[in-house]
Image 1 (tube, rainbow, N blue to C red):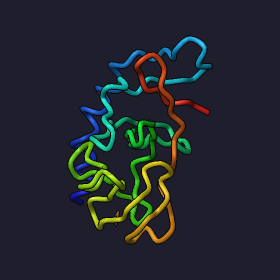
Image 2: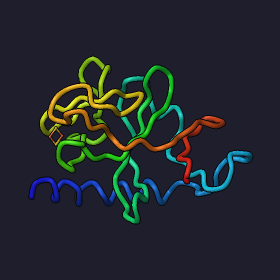
Image 3: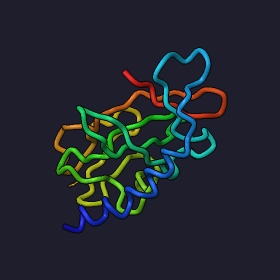
Length: 143
Ligand code: FES
């Protein structure tokens, strides 16, 4: 029950953030590129930015982070149990900023691939989303 309550608490501000973004992608980026946030919103190994994405005909929580100078994004769903990784919104990295960590039971994921690196994810990784940067913004590339 706590997880559902947490989801509903987070969904409203997240929806507002998504709704406030300009839905037009950058020139030359192709159709369907959706802005997520400013590039400067993502510090290397720092807080992530939460957003929502359509995945398998469902709107699901997702997040973007920066690691090694590059931006990555994943569906915000642990491979152990379908829980969001960040108990505190945007806190996806472990204390060293080396791995993404699930706050529920401590599963560790590689930031550059979403692959399981330890804990109860047992070899199953995160669902990766395609993102890119253009002119100081981060975009989600739609299929
Ligand atoms: S729900 Fe993520 S490690 Fe268990």
